[in-house]
Image 1 (cartoon, one colour):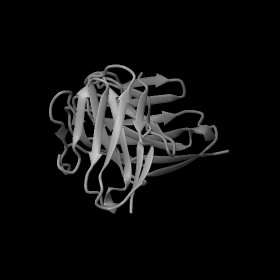
Image 2 (tube, each protein chain N blue to C red):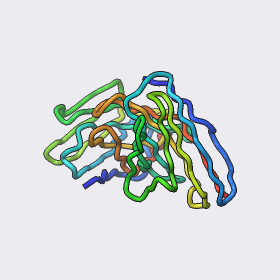
Image 3 (cartoon, rainbow over the protein chains, first blue to last red):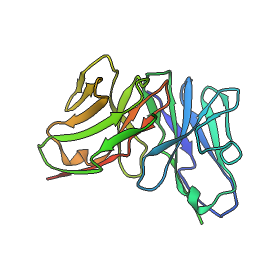
Image 4 (cartoon, chains in turn orange, blue):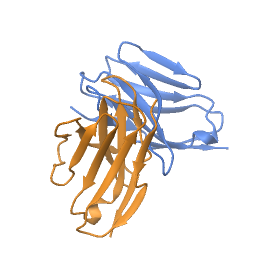
Length: 114
Length: 110
């Protein structure tokens, strides 16, 4: 398994601002993903964070809105840009070691946008 | 093609009973099927997982049944306990990333 630390755990932000969420893992991992979970809803994949290259975004998510960095095998950031109240969600980092292998989740960042 | 459909949306079970949650998928390229348990304010925790070459997997009180031809899989929780009250998500993986079902809110009554 992996110990995943996400920061911040929660934040309240003003409309139009940006927030960067950090995901730190205690061991090197092959795969890192960012998910969004809207209140009372399921998890939706935002993007795959690729080490040393641009992230791969799912349909409906774009780099300008959700820029992602992954400088090494243990760390990634997700930025939620130009926020609106519709961005109020829990954002979750998940990590794993390969296709068909276990994926572990951080405890999430609860974001509220006023 | 990328959807995973989960039912029921909510489930109430008496203590000691069996909880059953079902999922169906369409994409035959999915090669890994985990179940996650999520408590309020926490991230999802991996409960049990199965690959399509196996029809059943059991870990303690939790069993996954997998029907490849029907493209369905289910989670059975035996001897359900109040501590099992949580939201359960099935998922399917095409090459590493996970596609989640809609979730089932389980409540186990004492």
